[in-house]
Image (cartoon, rainbow over all chains, first blue to last red; front, side, top):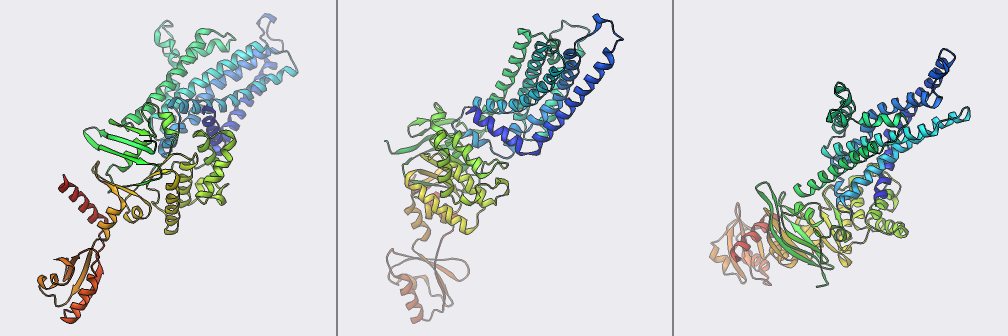
Length: 248
Length: 311
């Protein structure tokens, strides 16, 4: 059932220009940064640095692409997640799902899985692009994998928050804006509390938990943070939809 | 007991301090078509939302084929097909895509999805629209897709909220035929504020007014109320009411608007004939005689009134 709903969401995404445009645009941006990264690598590494200062091509280009990707996704995910529930509310199609023999959890998870599979496609393309470097040099696949996992978790968290915001309103664009603001605030919490790195609030910063992944470090604490983040907002969404049924 | 498909008892729904539906109880047997009648805002849609699990009742219970919809929502919802007021259609899908999505979500097994879609399309006259985007269909066809998605999994109970709204007369006729056909094997509940519609398709009628059930009974009672035994008679030189009452079968006379008289008579009496003869014989100047058909409002008023008297 979850996958039936996820399939429907994917179909809807690809049946409107939105999905294709975002996919193409993201790919264009990542491709550009990939290219610029390689270009800079040759310039930087062509002798001015002492051997111990040099970094591998995976890390150099990877850092370039992945830090950009996490930033770009901040804009892309709200645009994709905004219509998931708000549009159903607006077009009054929610009764279709509510009167089918489905639990609310299945509905929410279906939508989440649909969105995340779309974004997984984007991340898979980044992975493929990076892996293509292996044709000419030796890649550090561990570093690459950790970055991909980190980005995937980050994007999945964005999606969970986006779906929740989408369940709050009838206007997709309002959902997108609130999602963007909320995500942005969460990302730069770290920056606000830079003077006090032990502050509890700064612990909630998404970026702070993404950073170890981008160094190639997969820490279970960060994994747990992302999973809890996703779980929390999906639960909120289920509660919100349940309130629809109870309060009308 | 096996025959009872829908059993609602003491349904109440409160918004704030305002009870939109109050103590509505009824039951429906297999193969019956139940018409929900009432003016706008009477609580028809709210009741239907509660029956389909879209809205939790403030109190009371609903059983679909003996399964409580609050305790076991999944099992109960699998037995219901629901068309809300606005057909819930994903405009970006084609008719086929939409219907197979509906079939799969309602638990039709993978192998039989195609067949279910085909059958539903045939029943709703959609076979030629299979590959069209729902967005590009006319309102009438969208309504049909809405009905098709409600009956695709062959549910025990079909609940249609104002199914003929916004359709042209031919489509209305088609859909009424479809509803009658559905009534054969499913139980159907439909809401409407069009009285003739109820007369044509329903076996049972419920009139709901300000959230309360004011009438619950067979369609025959309503038909009698509507056609009644009354004539509207226009006479230029109207005699005294006593004169008219002398005519065989006539039981009552009362003025109805300008120079018109509403004459009631015994059932089975050929009052029209007698009145015409008397009018000619006494040169009362008859210029109009017609059966007095009551409007929905009148029947509605009468039924609510009767109910008050009965209590």
